[in-house]
Amino acid sequence: MKGRKYIAAALVCGTLMTGFTGVASAFDLGSVLKGGVISAVVNASAGAINNAINAVTAKYGVSSTDATKVVPIITVGDGGRAGAAQVSGPKEKVDQCKAALLIEQTILGSAKAKVLIPIDSLSVSNINRVQGVGVCASIDVSI
Image (cartoon, rainbow, N blue to C red; front, side):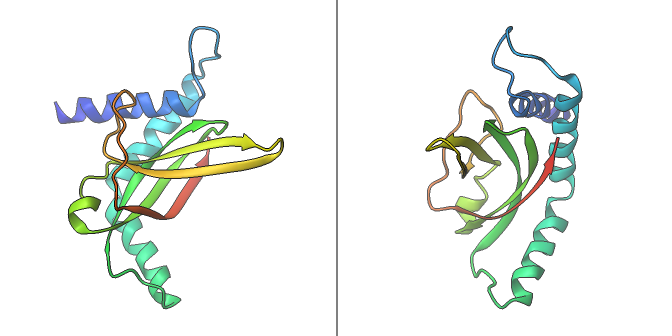
């Protein structure tokens, strides 16, 4: 049962990453599958990715004393990307994070804004920001 939830979440995430907004939009199954696979890989290797990011920050003497965790990125807006984000904060708050929402938007004519928000769900119908947690690193892959 738990596996079905991850598959459904991966498909939903992949659909979001393709910019699918309705019947009039082009539906690219390849991008959906890539997004789902990347999300599954992030979930499966989150500990290793988290340790690697922590090693990089330690190397440069800027380690966090807060808890850290790696979660998949869900992208909405102008982008078509997938990846992982490291979140940081109090352990009980970090444990609530299930993903990072990446909103990409062109502003002021030509500037590209990327907003990363730690969220408590992979469900696109019930997204809530986790207060007190920040995104401190991101890894992305073009799809």
